[in-house]
Image (cartoon, rainbow, N blue to C red; front, side, top):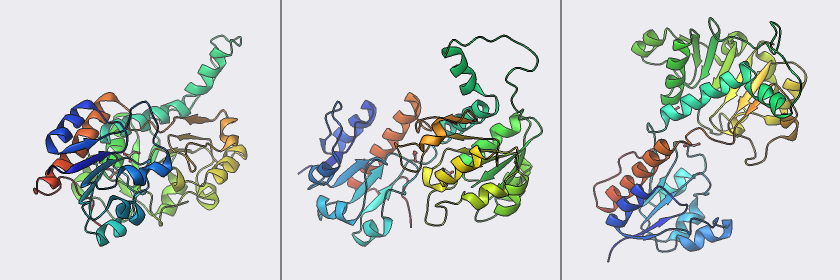
Length: 321
Ligand code: GLV
Ligand code: GLV
């Protein structure tokens, strides 16, 4: 009997092809959103599941799938929606999609950094409001990136890709994280390792690239924001809860920092309403990996992980505790 594979959300066609060759596939109607209560129903009897960060993957989920479940493949690099010990206890493998979304996410990070420092959103709002304007030497001045320091929190794959882009823009790289990067990488980026406290106190721009964990939840709180330079900008393209969004709104309203650019939100899809009123905030609706090319690569990698596990060949990109 072919294994049962459940896809919780519509994924790119080339990935579906891989899955159809690996087993019997149940996929949702692409025009219909899966109501939260139905997730447990649709995974019943699955051997493998392709899921997304919209799905809560925990012990109850695994139990709803049943004893045949061998692999859950999340189409994402972040897996804070997954209770990894609960899967481990049931000998279920978790795979994610590292690497294939690194460049897309780094590009979007830079797009947002430029948007907030060069006031692109504010400028577009002015034009769309059909307000009068004319070029003059003092009009809508922003902040340049050249010669500024970028403080990277989490120099992993995405943080490194952002640092490489920043070097091309003439920025200096500071970073912090759980440990030092490889000496070759530090040398390539001319990157300085700092404590979180020193990084916040010295960086002209701070970009967050750490995963969301209990340790990084509200890493950027009122105290961290107060430790930043008054002219500094904050960029978040990792996970919303890494930033205390209300504290951020307070800091932006009070001029504690100069601006913020956010692709992710603490209570997605809600956005702290005060942020929507501020002109020094650039916003995107969680678009970090949202290119056709990247989403296809992510879905393909997720599908290949499921196919490989179900064929007895083991996972390609397993998340290990
Ligand atoms: C998206 O946010 C991801 O983690 O891949
Ligand atoms: C993602 O792959 C990261 O390590 O930042």
